[in-house]
Length: 521
Image (cartoon, rainbow, N blue to C red; front, side, top):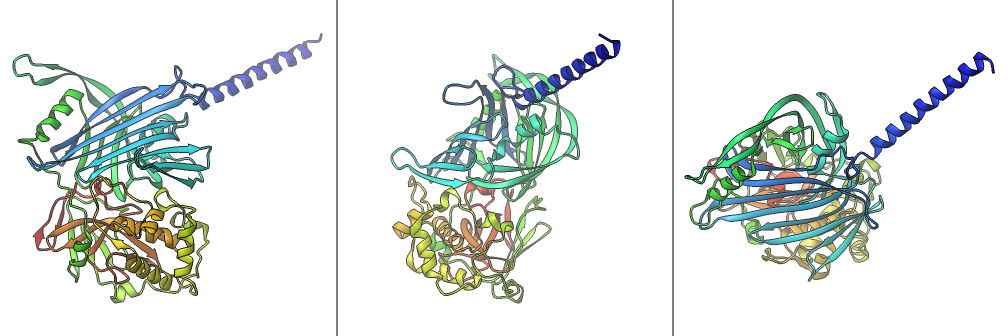
């Protein structure tokens, strides 16, 4: 055998070894999150929830890994719990969100169960991704359980797991920007989350405490030093910021509205919450506005309104449109029939809208009863003979107002889907808005739920209504005509509802022109 042939064989073997090593490394990186060999570090973190500098609650975040079984793949278990107290004892109110999610090895959703608790009742739902194309949602408890199925174009990452994804797969560094399909587990809202890494630093975080045998108080005795990155993004129309460590745990999280999460030792976070939530002496500065009733809407004052959003930082807040504007930290509403509002009604393409750029405003969603044949037939019957978006939007608003009875929310009664509201011919203001959006989308009219507040006679009330796109997004409130809705409506969340879970990150406080009003978290 010649030396040249030997050299060729040695070189070929060396190249083959390099190729094998490269393939093995690629495969190893593709399955990093496997029990025993995962890049995700199991652990737990505890947080003090603050409004400005005052404690209003505490939160727990935990991550674990699960080995594959006969019925499930390798998974990451992701759990978050939030406990909040609002108001002063003995009339204090408690709020809770518990979400337990099982994520695939790429941190996209596989299964999840969610519970939200508030003074007006408890809601539960469970989620499952079937294959890569269907999101199944079970609404309600075992006594009244319903299922909806919604097509998926891609499997989402839970919004609260985005920091974990960034630390695991994003290779965080200042200047990095990523866009992820995300799902908010507490509201079932889907969106494409955009996050940017803006800085890198090191932090000291609480590690261990001791309890004083005399005073029974806990004292911090040790801290750890960790590396972290600052990331910024949008959550429910509000700009949010967070420092995230190498393991994907948030160290600090805050919004311009004053709501903050600070990592803390468990004992210290729990003690601070026990003090503020004491049933006899507790006093929390958190004030959550009551949900608007049909009577509130009927008595809402007319005219223009202005609101100061204290501490606002809303570069991405969709607070502009033909009936409202945002300048600095002041939001103003205007008459829907003003010149500026009428400019929205410029010519549009006829219905149905089929442009793929607007797919998000036409898609089905768990609460909208996708595939309900009665709902689709009703929408076609109401809009028969017109392809004009403005006329179709007005007809649907009038039909829902005249045909479906608005009622106040009943504590403990689970929410209805759009199809159930149509069948019962009765629902809360939020459910009527949900029905309107479902009817509009079924005939190709772009529509969405929005959340915010209305100016009632005695202050602000949380409320949910709809918007239809007729040259611009105009407010539609099926409970209180006319069309478009009155300037008593101030939108704060686009694509969400006026629930406390949606409004939570928005504002530290709202002050109407001339008089103080109840604070929002």
